[in-house]
Each structure stands twice: as C-alpha cells, then as structure tokens.
Amino acid sequence: MEKVVKCVLLITTLISLYIIFCVGLGWFWTIGFSFDSDKINQILINLSYSYMAGFIFYILVSYLPYRLKTEKLKPVIKLKINDLYNL
Image (cartoon, rainbow, N blue to C red):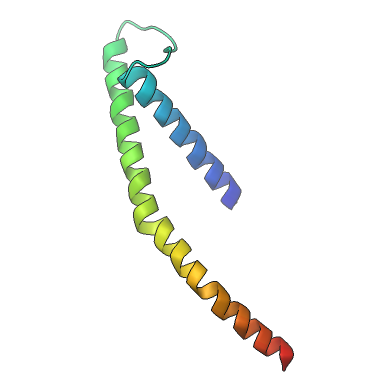
C-alpha cells in the first residue's frame, strides 16, 4: 500500500510540475487547445502551485521528522533486539 501511495504522489507531482513548466512558464509544448484555454490554464496553474505548496509542507512537517526519528531509533531497537536474542 505504501508503494501505491508513493507512486500516486510521484505521478501527481510530475503532472503538477509539467503544468507549471509548460503552461505557466511556456518552456515546453502544450497539449490541446480550447475556446476557454486561458481560464483553464489559470485554474491548472493555481491547482499546481497549491499542490506543490502542500507537498512541500507535507515533506517538512510530516515526512522529514518521521524519517529522522526512525533513523535515530533504529540502532537502539537493533541493540534491544540483540540483547533479547542473546538471553
């Protein structure tokens, strides 16, 4: 399940970055043309910026503290398991 969530986050992030670079900055080619393309493009850009801000907030508030805590506790847990195994 964790791999599925990471894959969905990665795909959503790549789509968001594509929209920001293609539509917002005009660096690469765009896909499709529409009568209301300016409105649609503005909505997509705003959604992409909002998603990227939320993703950065998630990494700074949730993901990094969890990983740091896990890395600090790994040696302690490993030592305790070895102590219990040697009894």
